[in-house]
Image 1 (cartoon, rainbow, N blue to C red):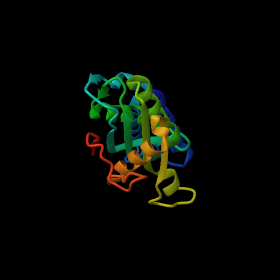
Image 2: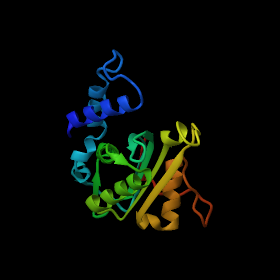
Image 3: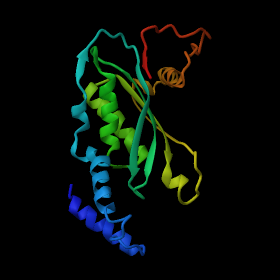
Image 4: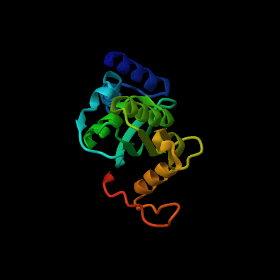
Length: 205
């Protein structure tokens, strides 16, 4: 990352809006912004697929869910933040699973780059399907877009929700079960009205 070029650009922006980059409060701003961009865009130099480590564990098509994973990113349209929570559900194949912290790392690496929420959601799902070779993946992201709350329509508190579904989780019953578990209650069997009996579903919050 070329931090000198970033600092030069920030000084140019400050001058363009009518400020003096040399005044006390702004003298260090170009450097601070360059440091910030180095941190917030660190994912550009990292491979999300390399974050996943596979483990073997007995699994009979039980769903694994990690929910309420906090994330923040920068919208590529205005370079303003969007932030919120990610929820991930997957059904392992061939008894191959990964640690919950590895799922968090995938989210972080893909979020730490100029992004769109829709693309970020799809990229997480695609990485998990490719590396885990899961039978199915569901990713849901809920976020507040500051480009919506600070500018334009100026609607603070509005939440945008995106989802990406892959493999067996496209099936209506499995998708409903995953959504119910993410929302925090045990789903009823859609045909019998009885509580779903899958006891080994793992939910991490």
